[in-house]
Length: 427
Image 1 (cartoon, helix red, strand yellow):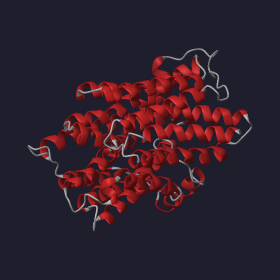
Image 2 (image 1 turned 90 degrees about the vertical axis):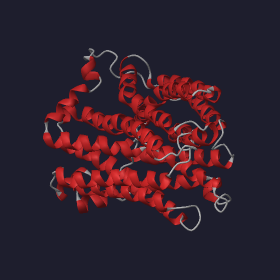
Image 3 (image 1 turned 135 degrees about the vertical axis):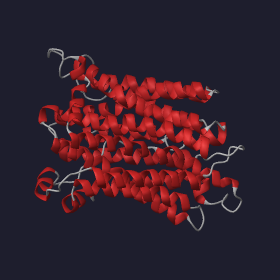
Image 4 (image 1 turned 180 degrees about the vertical axis):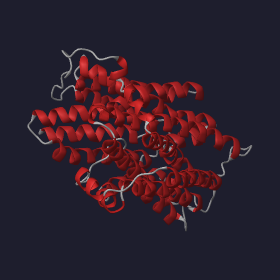
C-alpha cells in the first residue's frame, strides 16, 4: 500500500470521528435528552477549552519524548474509550466533563495528523506542498461520510452516533501504530522555557495596535464559528413538530442537508486566491462577516418546504463565511509578523478563534437561547435565535469596517499567496 493511500485513510478517519457526532449531538441533547440550552452551550465550549492548551502541550511531548505517530495513536484510543462511555451518562453536568475529556484527547490529534503526514511524505522524498492537499481533502470527505452514515442509519437522535465515532477512533488509534516512525525532532535539543514552548511570547504582538485590533475581531468572529454546528441540526429536527414538514428530507435527515456546508467549505478554498488578489485581505475578511450575516439570516427565514432553498443557500454561504476569514486571517498574520515569532503568532490566531472565541460563543449563546428564546414548555424561537446571531455578525462587520485599518497591496498578495491552499483547522 502506497504511503499516499495510507495517509488518505488516516485523514478520512481523522475527520470521520468528528463528523459522526459534532453536527448531530444537538439533536441527541435537545430531542432525546431534552436538557437545557444553557448547559448545551457549555458542551460546545469544550472544543475551545481543549484547543487553548492541549495542542501545544502534546506538541511538546511529540517534539521531545514520544514518536508522533505513537502519541497520535494513544490519544485516539483514549478518545475512543471515552466516546464509548458517553451513552451511559444520564446527567448533563457529567456529560460536560466526559465531552471535555474526549476533546482533550481529540483536539491535539488535528495538529499531530499533519505532523505525522508531513514526516511520512518527506521520508518518501515527496513534496508536502504538492502531495498533502489531495490527501487532506479526504478528511472533509470523511466528515461528510460520517454525517451521512449517522443520518441514514437513523442515529441522529440516538447515542449510537457516539459508538460510530468510537469505532472509528479505536480503528485509527491502532492503525496509526503501523505508520512510518516520526521520532521526536528535538530530543537532543536543549529545552526551552514553558513560555517559549507554548508560544506565549506571541502575546507581545498585542502591543501593536493593528494586530491587537485584528486579534480582537478574530476572537469576536470565532464566537460565531460553531453556532450553526451546534444548533443547525436540532433546528431542523424541531420542524418535526409541524405535521406539514414532518416527512420532508431535511427534517428526516438534517445532517444530510447540513453536510452541504462542508462541501461548500472545500470548494470556496479554490476561490480564495482570486478574491485576495482582487480585493485584498481586509475586504475578503469583511466578505466573511457579511456571509455570516447571510448564513444566520437565511436560516431565520428558511423552512424545510418552500423555504428549503434558503437553508441550502445558507449552507453554501457557510463555505465563504468560514474559509474567507480563517485563511485570509492566517495570511494577514503571516505578512505582519517577524519570522522568528510567526509560528507562535499563528498559534495565537488559532487560540483566539478556535479557543477563546469558541468558548465565548458557545457559553453565551447557550445562556441567551435559554433565557430569551425558550418558552416555559421548552420550545425555541428559532426565528429570533438566528436573527440575533445575524445581528451580532452585522455589528462585528460594521465595527470592522470602521476600526480595522489595512491597505491592500496586490503585488504582495500575489507573491505571498499565488496558489490555492487547503484549510486544516476544521473539516
